[in-house]
Length: 533
Image (cartoon, rainbow, N blue to C red; front, side):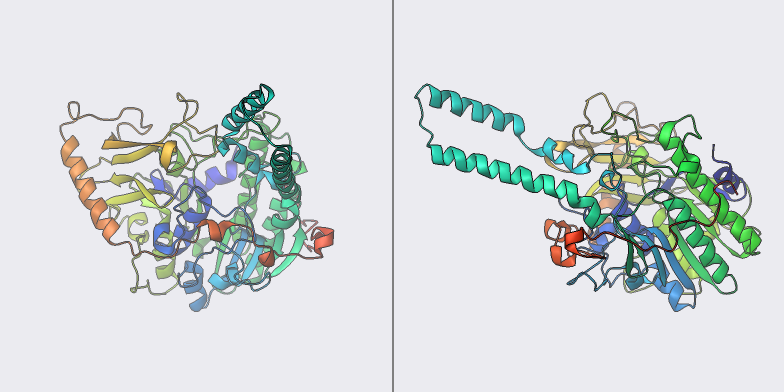
């Protein structure tokens, strides 16, 4: 099904315990780019919402943070981001672009600044309908019915003006919500080339092919000089889509078709490197920023969620299905072919690895949580430098992974876990994503403890009776957690409600508000390559 990705795995190193630093897009990407836990940069929310959901939000990856793209650019590399950003855009005006990828070290940008929400695809409904799941509609309905009945029987008196005012308020709120849903794609689903909006709203048809052509063009233009390219796929994030050439090519519906298209794109990029004689001096890294989203079912009842295999749960949780992600690295002639490592490795490790390969210096004025991967990948050492990995649910320390020295065991302790719905499932179908606080979680004292080498699916929590090391392991994990928490310096929450809410003065608009900002001026609108080349 994925011959190009499979070939990449055979020609390089495969990571079987590759861990995303967060189970959601925005914080995971912040950690990937900076080599730091998202809590350190303020990219971990203390509220329910853990990602940016509008393009005109004021939150951002702080400019003080150092990305591997910034370092590479300082070392003379041409840098590009093609695809999804999702780390902020504007500060004070709709065109200041202070949080744009160019402010974080990327010379060239072609992509989207938000994410591929259902709302961006016609006919897929809206993620915001899930807001209704958080409103006490049943309680309100019972209350209204009760008051109406009591009023009819003369027990209480409800003035007509009050009733009309309440009805008008409800109607106005419903109208505003409906207007928001209808206009959302026009204001938030746009495509940019560098600092110019070139398509608003963007059309997903052929979008992956357009981005692939843009990437191949970047490689060709910069083949004679050092370059760094971050290609961030829009697929297979929901809302699910596949270009016409890939529709119906799999036995797994639109999800399988989208996977086929991603695999085609990987193949195009690898062939471009070969054509430009860059295979032996280019490090290729393929991964995902979190596990599959299990709650995704279309408004027509189509199952659009992915699969996390044997691993429990998915996106928005720190069960293995939410954070254990693919990890492939290929560098012909430098890294061994066909090597597999089971050591715990984080996507934060990319930062120090890239910084050192570009000849830069890893910052010493801040905590860097990632470690250089090259010694492990090249076989100079056998152990990962991560004895402990800390798993956050938004800004809350949720679980800890411990890989003791001189041991093949990997322990994992949960301080709290999400409450699934239905209860016997592994997803939060009632809220579309799992949350981290209040009635949405269950706290555990003592923590739930698993040993992942024997129980990778996390189905059998250990007990003091069944595991002699139970108390010793938890003692070590609690001590490590305390040391880690002490190293966290409080910073501004970039995902606080005030930073996530839509602000009209920050809204990019490539035409006029009266035209709902619509425009079509993308030079890549008709991709040059054939998907079957």
